[in-house]
Image (cartoon, rainbow, N blue to C red):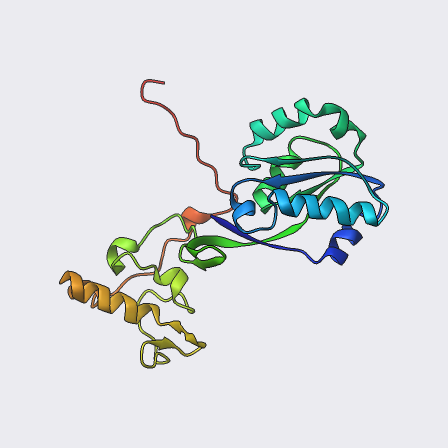
Length: 218
């Protein structure tokens, strides 16, 4: 899940300074779970903008705004409201915002900050455990990622700062290398803990990424 936080309303107003009318877009997937772009948040934003004198020509909470073809289809279905807007306020992640970018030539404004790919511990509690590095090393570390979960991202640890299983940068944060050691010990694979790892291949995560899937026989 892509974790987002809402920008301060004052910042949103500054973004929309030159726009008299705006179309609002939320996302029923990640942003709804993060409570940054679901139905209640879009309705609240509409009311706040109208109180500031803005005209909201339309509002939609789409399923997976990052799906570019679906977003373009939604725009066609709401052509009148879309055409009437000076710009678009997108209440979801940066991917969704750029999906809207592909659907219009008008100004597109982000209402959220995109934080990280998160695991859901419980509703409203999200933890980053994967950095989308493109060269997964989980097999070597008991399915616990040191690239993300170690503050220093080291592949040959632990560092000298671990203390009672906690990270020196934050006493509330578990030391990833302690977690890795304990897990490998449970699995009877501590030999992996002693393995020396070479420099990670960051070439595979060069930006921007692109993957095209093809069916066999095509």
